[in-house]
Image (cartoon, rainbow, N blue to C red; front, side):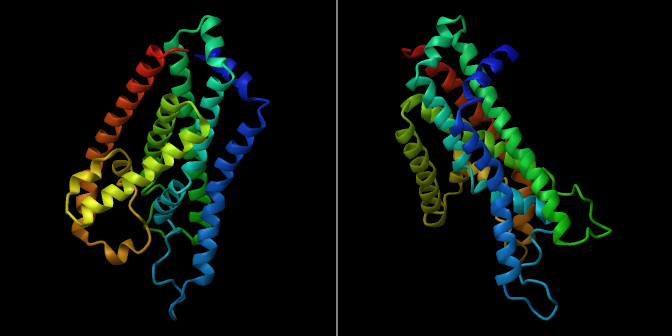
Length: 269
């Protein structure tokens, strides 16, 4: 695997677009969170207590959930990076050259999936560090609160990131054109949200919560106003469903990887 990764490194080390998109992926996470944090501190009305009516979502332990949820809004940037790098393989026929040089098709697809894993780890680490910074800046850690309470939301972000990345990769293998692949990815993400909203709110069909995008979204509930709007029963129900959400997300991920491998090993180069 290390030899394969070294070859992949040679492909991207001088590729300016790669570094631009990777930089945007990493910098946009603290950037967006800082923007939201600044707006909340300066624009939201505060009572005489000096605290916002929505609490302190960037203070520990809520910072883990808030930063993780905010960062999920940026999935399109790493998805564009994945689509760009993958379509370049087909545009410049480097995938074909790798096979000619002795790679098996299974090795090629394996190293690509491993790259998705590495990118997801980098993004999750960025979310982790961003949450620590904002949690420390927002206020002093209360004596009865552990710094690591609710750090699990960073793991949930990682699960969501690897899921979205694999969907983007699968779209690229099926379409092989950057513009069309990006459009298909966006249409799918938007379309699933619309379908889920219609069936859940109009027809009261909760099964749509287990669609590929919805099941990972459910791992990180919206953090703002949750203390005001979420009942204890709803919170308990969410806690009980976490293992189910993770199991379903893992099942989808296995399916994505299988379809990606099947597609590349059986299609014409």
